Length: 445
Image 1 (tube, one colour):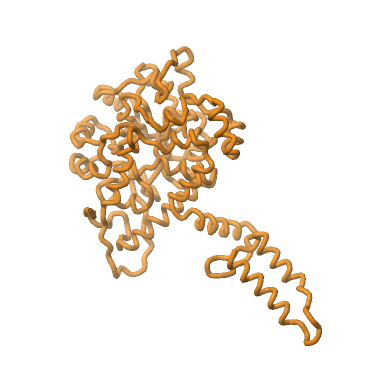
Image 2 (cartoon, one colour):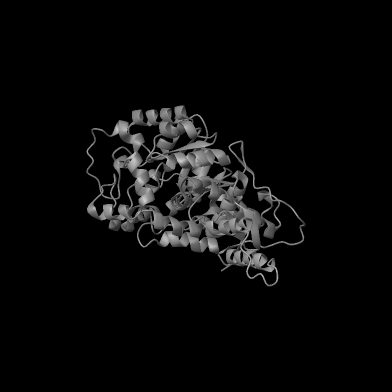
C-alpha cells in the first residue's frame, strides 16, 4: 500500500506540473485517472522494488497471483497459521495434534534442527537438479504425499485435490484405507505414481478385495502400515469433541459456523466418512473408543506371516511403513519387501518413540533397500537433512493439508513450488548440483 500510494502521488504530481502558469490547477487527465484507479482497485500491483504493471490478462494474473501468495505465505508455518483460521477447531485438533504430551512430535523437530550441513563455496552458477529415482521410476522431485486418514475432513474433496496435484507434479500420492474417498473415487485423477496404504484387515477375503480394488483403480505401489497395533489416545483430539464418524453437536456446529468456506464445501459433499470401508462394515457393531474408528472393527495387528502373505499377494512395489528398529529393517529385507518407510506416525501413536532422523543412520546401515522417510519435515532444508542422512525419498502428510486449508485447490501446487524453491536455495549454499552431491551431515548441538 505504501508503494501504491507513492505511485498515485507521482501521477498526481505529473498532472500538476503540466498546468500552464496562471491557469491554476490542471484537471487530472482521464488516462492518468484510470491508472490511479487501477492501483487502488488492485488491477495494478506494486512490488517491493516499485511499479510492476497491470495484473490483467492470463499471464500477468498468474505472475501477480504467485507474487501475492509468496509474499503472504513464504514458509510452511504461514500456511499452517492460515489453515488454522479456515478450519473448524475440532478438525484442526485432529490434523495438528499428536498423542500424550506430544513429546515425540517435538523431538522430531528438535532432532532435525540438530542436523548440520556444511556450506561449500566457489561453485559458480548452476541450477540444482532435484530429480531422483525410486522403484526404477524417475521423479522430478524427491518428495511426495503421505497417507492421512480422513483427509476429506480437513478440507472438502481433499483426496481428489491432492491426487490431482500429485499427478500434475509427477510425484507419488498415497491414499489411506481410512480416507474419506475410496480408490474408485480418486481413480479418474490419479497419476502414474499412485500408492495405496493398507491398514491390515483380519479377514483374508476382505484383504483380497481391497487389493483388487486398489489395483483396478490404478494404484501400483502397496504400503502396509505396521505402527498402529492399537488405537492411540490422542488427548487433544478427544478434548476437541471429535468422534469417528464425526457427529455435529451444538458445540461443533458453532465451530463450523465460524468457518464458512469449509462449511460450504462440506454442505455440497456431505459429512465425510471412510468410504472404502462401507462395503465391509454395514452389519458391524460400532461401539468404539472415541479415538478409534470403524476401521478397527476390521483390522488386526499384523505379524511377520502377514507381511509374507501380502508380499505374495501383491504384484508391484511393496513398502512397510512405521519401521524404527534396524533389526526389523534387516528382517523385512529378507522377506522381499521393496522399501522401508521410517516413520513414528508424526508423533501421533507413541509418545516415547525416538525422532525418525535419529534412527535413520542405523536403519540405513542395516539394509540396502530404498528408505522412505517422514515425520517432522517442514521445508526443503529438512528434506535435504534427511536425504543427506541416508533417506532416498521423503513423504509429508500434514503439510499438504495445511496448504489445502490455507489456499484450497491452489494449495498443493503452491506448496510444491515453495518446496522446490527451498530445495534449490539450500542446495546452492551447499554447492550441491544434484541430490547425490549432498555433504555428510554433522551434529550441531
